[in-house]
Image 1 (cartoon, rainbow, N blue to C red):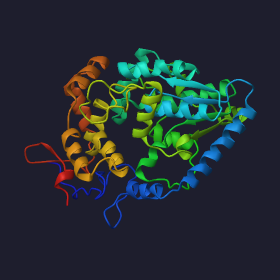
Image 2 (cartoon, rainbow, N blue to C red):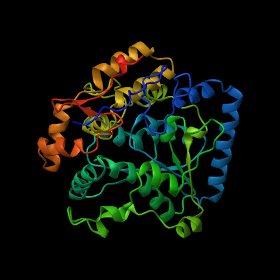
Image 3 (cartoon, rainbow, N blue to C red):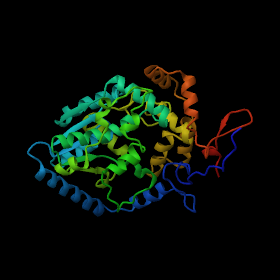
Image 4 (cartoon, one colour):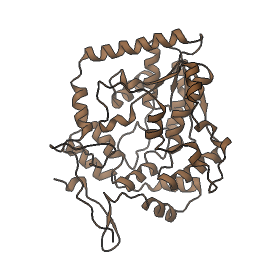
Length: 383
């Protein structure tokens, strides 16, 4: 029997547990992400006007440094935020090269959205994908190593566009949301730039390409050339810098999706997801909202429905009561059709999957009762 940990605390305003990444509950029981939202809600139109002017200055800088071709790389998955990024750089007179890291498992709607980008935006588009065999090996290896079969995608979208920018001497790389800001790590006054340290610590979970060269899967150097970042001297020679467009424009995924659908025909998912209620997120990998997110639940006791509901509560689209109901409906679900598809893809049994997944359960969340069943504290049972 695994002993019961201290009772899990949940934010009184959204639905995040105290264990959520880098999140802190204050003396009033409100999480740092909700406190950060208060700061953003207080920002004036003048603030965002000044930030847009700063972005326009960067656009002029990039155009001046360009050799006459592309002045920026925009890493795109084909999702709603990718559309917003490209729409925004074009609005500011830039000439982007769209660059995609392709992980092989797009939903049909996601693939159509990706393919449509070069047509609706009139932009050149470079798509790179490792071999399917390499991707299957990385799926298996990273699942066993860190409980994240999609690690390759988090890493690839941050490494490969920098290779392209350096190779073609493109001065600016424009990513979208500051993804780790969800926990309240940064305030509106912070200006977060892309750098190797944040990529290593946040996107790559502290792993590098060399960690994937193991006899178990037989991956070798040539399989993972795209995973190795350009050297500091290579980047310095070109002068390429990476930025997050979320520093300059108010970030609202729901509004992005609505506008991109209206302007360009961006397509939402046609079939409901088992583990969340949103229909416009994570269409670039069919397993992201499914078995990948189920692993997050197994590890930390909450999943994507908690992520989405917390964001929507902060933006005023949901009440906390509605968010709690959605978490209760979705967060615990083991996605049958998605899991079966992934197990067939990588050649693994469900028994092996469950055995490995259980090794990643966080003992601050999970315990075993006298019957050997995994137990946790639930959001709807909290005070």
